[in-house]
Length: 136
Length: 480
Image 1 (spheres, each protein chain N blue to C red):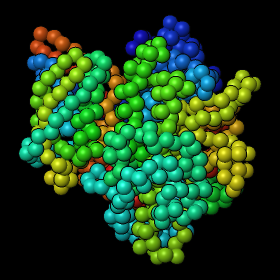
Image 2: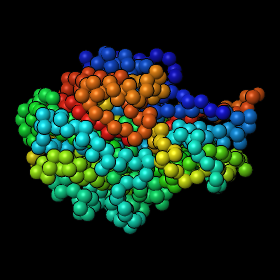
Image 3: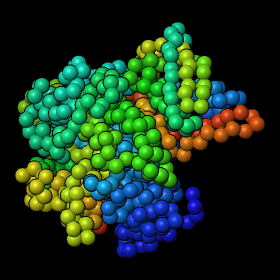
């Protein structure tokens, strides 16, 4: 699903999935997991999440920035993502979660932004994977 | 990356990477470092990133790397680059996600001896009064119209609305307000993200530290700043919170497409830039300046809350005043002399501090004879420094110097084999009381994760970019 990567000042993750849709869903989950303890997040509300880009990389960065906006701007924590439609330059999906309650969802790290630093999206026989670094 | 980097020592603290046209470099890279620091720097991508910065269209003078340099994204952290204001580019990556992340130093009329016995009480009080903002919202409840005023007026808005004293706005870079801020250029999302976070410290390497002046190195300069050995001061390190982060995200997304229109290609997408004089460039600068003003208002609100905490514990008779406030993630329109010629440039300081020398008209009158105060936070639990800008900075680095100790160790490496309780106990043993809102925050900021701040200071002092004034030691820390 995903693992954490090291960076001198910040933090990254490698996410993967059997197809591009699951890669996007797992990358979103990785971002949530870096920021908060997601164990207690109840999947009781559903939120539409959509993004566009001009290529694979910007589509993924903009998608994750959207998830971050929900987290830091709307104060919504999410624990399940489903991609409904993924076109070359557009992604649309749904996410399940709830409004953040700092008591039940303590912060681990505050993410400032999603970067293009060493961003890599690759495909092989087993599926798709991506490496993404976040500014902390 | 592409093999060994050809770096030559110019003297004991200066090193040069000559321009390599095959890599698209338009200028040299100059690195300020001791041999030991250079060895540390060479272990990550900092130098490659400084070479990438040298490819920016319209760069004037060399791409500069300060001794606290470490790997960032696009720009290295501890990097300085000036671009021609008429023909050059502006790069949001050269400012970073945390626009006007900066530091302010506050003097108190208390001594170390007075504060030590009550340090636990003071830190508990301050931890209640100064929200980190990683949990809930801050204490300042304003609407969008007032937020637009904050974005236009910075520190001044806080002072006018009861969050501070008149002199708080005077002792700050730019008086705590950048001209040319345009709240209209800040997206609704950025405002939504920032609004509840106004007056909060944030997380990561941000902190509030109660410190004492351990040693004065320059009596005259210290006297001008109203500090002496044994005196208690407070260092506040934070930025523009979610508002600035979203401004950077918004404009990075826009600039990817805009770069194609302006035929700009770069080795690293995080360096994304557009001509300063383009509509996109002007719009970004309007938004960046607004976010910078938000950051100054934010640091001012924190100073106001801190005043309340200190008065609560030590009584209202305690005098608390701002020494100075500097930004270290910013792009500034400035005039500099380059190769004997006066040039108007945009100085990108990404993890670097302005350090104007004595006599500069931008410095408040009471500091004009000593030079601009430069505030360098060290790592948690070690030391911080007060410097003043020197002539060397004007001659060589577009009036810039380092901004901190610089990270050495990754966050995951710092966490390995450590827990928060042990870290807190180790700090207590050194007489430092720490409070943190996030579980991982305190472990990831352990002193061992950073370079030695004293070594960084020795380099900039020896290079003549800034002069040592005082070394500060912590007694209490609040981390986000």
